[in-house]
Length: 457
Image (cartoon, rainbow, N blue to C red):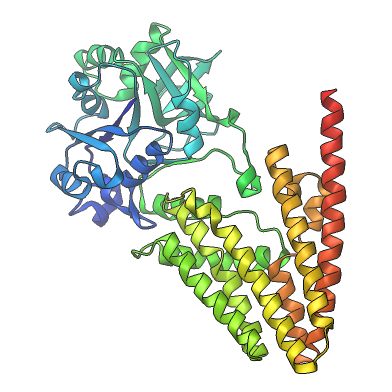
């Protein structure tokens, strides 16, 4: 299926930002608006695009080219009447779109899940319009919907119960409805949809019905979208994208300290040509410097750097989600994280062993690694089997996750005990902490999975 992107307008309400470039090329966290549309669409399997250009359209063509650098195909259509309503721009694509297609606005940034659900919809009408059940703001296109059908649509209609998100699934018949509207002097896309609605040929897809719980993010994320009209919309979009790209941190240190720092760093880093994989490599290099420092006895410096690694470790995944660069390769990051985490315990334990000639640190280290490996595996298996994080399985788990055994929390007793000159005590503390976490995770996981099994019987 192809996607038609309307990118002809200037966006005069963005003032100086569109003086020398079209609205769709405005940067948002390191990507232009239209690049975000293309990359989001690509994630649902769309790899052919028709882009209608107008104001400074040559700059869009120069920036995107034929789409090969995004591994997609792009065709362009010029709309010299770009100052007219956006229905005119849609109509320009009539000859290139002979089958069902997705229709998008180059200045509407949206949640991948909206497009994914719409893309897989069963078309019973010529138009499926994604709607949002929220109060309209000035300038919003309002929609009156009844029983899944559009009754009326427009910016100035008196009665409405939802708003237009600018994300549609269309059949080629939409062009005939737009032509009817233009003959009557109405040039907006909404006017064409209104024509279809009169024929009971326009239905809605309610985005508020999309499941909000995101298992991988360990939190609820309401399906979101935003129309970039003003500079304040860009700031709001930035905050929204970063927040929705942030996993719900499990432990208290990550939640209250790391997350706000990571968000500011990602907002800054995203404007540079740094890839998530490059960040992952840098974090691992820093992590193994920590290992070396522990091994050779520079305990205080090593302990301080563990906190730096703790913050940096969250940047690569968040940057990948912010810049739409997630990959299957990136999922291996957690395995490498576990490897360097274990290397810290081994290096610290070996140094304490070599300093005291006591085998106690090594024995403590063995059991720490066993407990951590066990509860991490239980945690991962629970999510695979149940479709949700163990941290969100119940009220107890939501509270316990803030104090459960995590690398970030283990770094605290290590630093404290090094400052108190009793580093061995940190291993004893971590042993008990990891052991308790292993017991709690395994028993709670078995409880929830057993309940689910009995419900199936």
